[in-house]
Image (cartoon, rainbow, N blue to C red; front, side):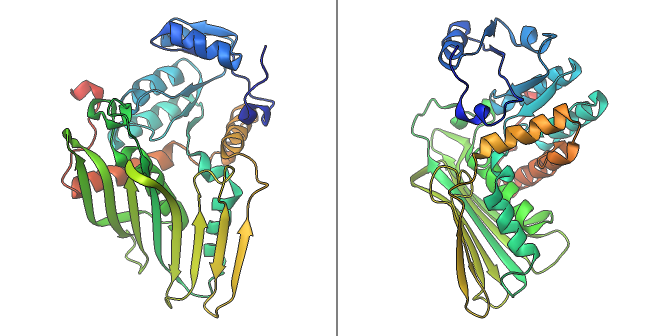
Amino acid sequence: MKPPPPHLAQVPTVEVTAIAARDVARARSFAKKHGIPRVFDTYDQLIHDADIDAIYIGLPNSHHCEWTIKALQAGKHVLCEKPISNNAQEAETMAVAAEKSGKVLMEAFHYRYHPLIQRVRELILTNAMESPLRHVHVKFAFAVFSSNDIRWQYDLGGGSMMDTGCYTANCVRYLIGEELDIVSATATPLRKDGRVDQSMRAELQTTSGSSVTALIETSMWSLIPRISIDIRGANGQAQITATNWLAPHVVYNNVTLKTASGKKTSESFTKARSTYGLMLEAFADATLNNNRAAILTDAHDAVLNMRLIDSIYTSAGMSIRESRAEK
């Protein structure tokens, strides 16, 4: 058998033992490539297998709710791809199902488990800027060239805000430490389907009414990839910046601090482990050792994130993603 992928090798308590897909031939090919011993013909067979402890759901967004709930009801812990659902109502239903089952439901925002983003939050909490927090600007943009990509398909929960955008929404909420209201939101609709956003820009303010504001910019049609954080203090000079906060284990992984007094320092996270390995480690700790505190992106947080995404769509004059039962 082939060795496990690098992310799994970092977490010896996790083993991928089976896979299922609509196209069994593709599933068999994937299993052979990655050394996965068993292939199931259906999702139902997979989630009801007695030897499996947890399920990773990497289906299109529109299918997350249905199969997460089925897996939880089958007694399985669930690591669900982001965004956790098509809309906030689905996320709430999933959270209730997780509570009833007593099993772990974790949203796969892998970047949250990396020391780079945690360091940025620490700098804010400790007032390292020597100036109160005033503004957080988060960008995530790249290009999805294939017109057949599921991320462009409304019926499958596609759209920029549902892909790159769900990261930016989660990131500003985490860094500010408060929930956010919409000041304004502007979408660029996809030419062939106006229900799908090619890009989104949203100005936000804290629900509490504090003076902290935020801006998120997200796109799936940017020829130049942009993944950045720019945080400003009240005096206009103090600043924290972070490059490639999404996958700092790959490349470009610096956090730079400029204080109100003009002192500038920079930290590199080159030697830090993979975001995916760290996320799996937390998932394993929660499921095997019942350490629920290891889960930074739980079902409750997922509900709050989907509420913000729904609000951004509404403010931009676009429809939220419908549940499959509504179509």
